[in-house]
Image (cartoon, rainbow, N blue to C red):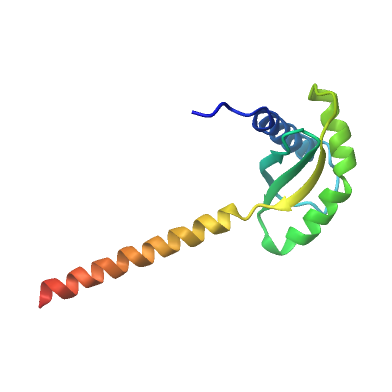
Length: 125
């Protein structure tokens, strides 16, 4: 089993901290309901990609623009609680894993229903 990489451990801590900062300290009335789903950090911990999902898909582009504009503030606030020599530069991106999971689930359901229809057709003949 591979060890739990340092970048993953720090990414988990950063995800919690960034979530808290967005929830309590980013004061922008244009922001709706945001979930920070993951933070992927480079192995050298200098850069990070913060994946988010939003409740209303039509607000995604605006939300990403606002969060990327506030990235410096969020990074500065994270530095107060996360004890690292250097806090990673962060970029916010859309988390597409939820959509991908729903697509896979739909494909699996189609296969299941197709197999059931084939069995039903085979049983009636």
